Length: 246
Length: 246
Image 1: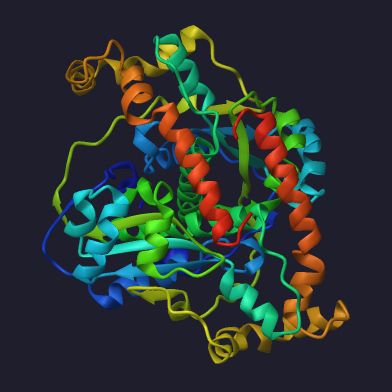
Image 2 (image 1 turned 30 degrees about the horizontal axis):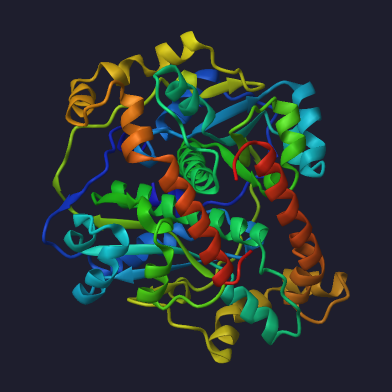
């Protein structure tokens, strides 16, 4: 299994082949064995197979082709609603309309999502995380009819791989592991940590295509811009409020 | 591997036996293959083996015995500092001092943490998530010398299992999976979803020991209280601000 993870890559193109319901349910229910805050299981998973529902979700994800191209789209939601309803039905006063509870639920949700991914890959499926989930949460909330205290945290597209791309680079592992305390990075550290990434032909082309001087500028000026981040931060907080968290 | 996950349980008592450095590094570096926002790898892992460092971390985790009892404690941190430093060194203007960027980094961090756990369990190790990390983040920041734009998201204790407890119950999987859209829960749904949990002798004893009427009251009045959640929410936001996120 460690080799599956070592060899993994994100899969964005899928065969036109359904995932059997029993297989999907087995993978999901096994992923629910992941650790969970106080045994509360603060998540729900919405399974999208219907074409019309994929159409509805697609704009929320900036029409990335994986949404309509995958046989199954999974939206993993932080869910304090089920637990809160249980409390209300049992003469207990819930107190989960706050940021800490959202964080606990979001953590539970991500542990399940990632366990699902590892299991799915071991079963021969390919997955892609769709990071846009928290950029346009309201559109997803509307499409999937998510009530208060339910919030979409991440989306995964799943299917049998059609195209298996080259594996993406990673930073040197030792640069991400700190013994005993955080060892801050010097300029020289930064140079050596990013040297391989900067040496890749694809990244050099990426700089040229975008008419930038450095790869970092492609990130700061195009892909993950300050103004976008600030706008989305405000929006995320607003929708968290609307859903009853915060 | 799916059987390892199906059979898993949290391990809180460990043998007095070190984890070989090479094994730990192999598991960690493999976990860094997990999906990551834009290839940015927005995390750092702090490895605690030193007894004095465990002593320093212990109060932040309410002196839960796993911290001092495990051979290795891993603090998984959201880290936008390394990436920000790279931007600064490359004539690019970073814009990651905001909530969206914290969320992206926290998600990256949790995917790595959970991949590590699955791999560790497959390798015969046992793990325990320590949920108190976000309750007392400042104490951890101080102990581990975390600079701005680095934030402790979760902690995992790891070691060879000494005591393997009974497996914890889980809610019926089908109640957590929604086809196409969120199907809200009725009172009857809630009754049937929680029936098994409420039927367990351990939980009945838990109610009696705590002099409560229902299991839900043990959660709302003792384990996850509204006033605690509200206090911790404010504190979490305050420390996020201090670390330069938000």
